[in-house]
Amino acid sequence: MVFLIILDPVPMDLNNLKSESIVVLGGGFGGLSTVIALLANLGEIPIILIDQNERFLFKPFLYELLADELSLWEAAPKYSALASELGFIFVQDTVVEIDKLKGKISTLSKLEIKYSQLVISTGMITDYSGVEGLKDYAYGFSNLYDLGRIKELIARINCSSECKKPLVISGAGPTGVELACKISDLVNNRIQIYLVEKGKKVLQNCKSFNREKSIEALGKRNIKIYLEHVVKSVNLNYLELSSAYDQSKNIEMIDYFSLIWTAGLQPSSLNLLQPFLKGNKKIEVNEFLQINEFKNIFFVGDIAFDKLNRVPPSAQAAMQQGVVTAQNIISLRNGDKLRPFEFESLGEMLSLGIGHASITGYGITLAGSFAFEIRRLVYLMRMPGLAQSLKSTGSWLFSQKLINSLFFQYR
Image (cartoon, rainbow, N blue to C red):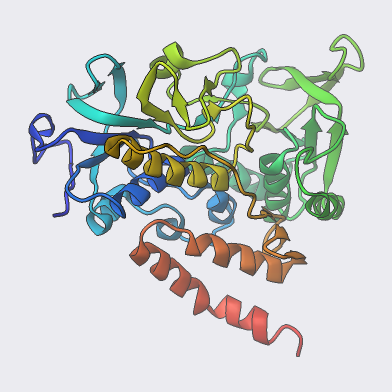
């Protein structure tokens, strides 16, 4: 049986299901991977996915959506379509309370849902705290709303012949570097981009090959890099840069066009998760991705950390955690031994402007247009749901642009 819940009206009574359900909060990489792995191994147990958004977003494709290299349906399928295909219950709503003792959650629309096991994978959003003026004047880049705002920003640059002020991007991790290259191409180097990084080098935690190719890509564009600098404050007309190690030194006032902030994240459901959070705004879990006080609650993705087993805050880590969490839920229900999570790096891929990428892993190191096509193919094949994956991959395989790039560029 396939279940789908639309909140107005609700077609079934969630409080009277035949058995206590498994509830997953957050339909990002970790949450959806948990759901899919559970569906492959459980029979009649209701699996409920709750997310406040209408669509799942394959975040590595945000850059392709920004450049209109992919359509929205390819990178962000609706949860309702995935629920219909895969057979889980989808609730578009916001969870406002978790009653850990009674084993139930409450939502903004007054639903109360009991659970036998709970998976929390609500992800992270841009953190605008800590810098004066940031919340009022900076853009983020982590969801479809941010995407729309930055597309409007690019349109303003391209429609103005007098736009001379620099665009500032704070944070030279993967998001900042990929965004700088893509925007530079989309505005055809019409304005200078300042890439500001607190550390001593860009892509501090990335593979050396990808870092080299990224520095090369940045150098080919109208991008100026500020290492060991931070944005100290920002207002409508100016932002203040200072030394990362002594903010009273090397202060530079910049008359800027706009600021994109990629340098900090916080849990997206901050109030809901406050009782679980540690000082680093994350949730400390054990090797089984549980909190010790409540063994039927699991945490997956960027919000979780194990101080004895550090993993990167990446999509592939969240997906692997989702699979292990599903296995541990089944083991918990059967009284079997749980499996500790161990991250296995499958490689690293970066988008470096329109039609170009860099890849390290999968047995190869490759950069350029062919790397871009491989990156897209690998990600399309990972889209959730067989129908969505086949549809997206088929669209890529039979695109005229791909055929031209593979067969005619070297004639």
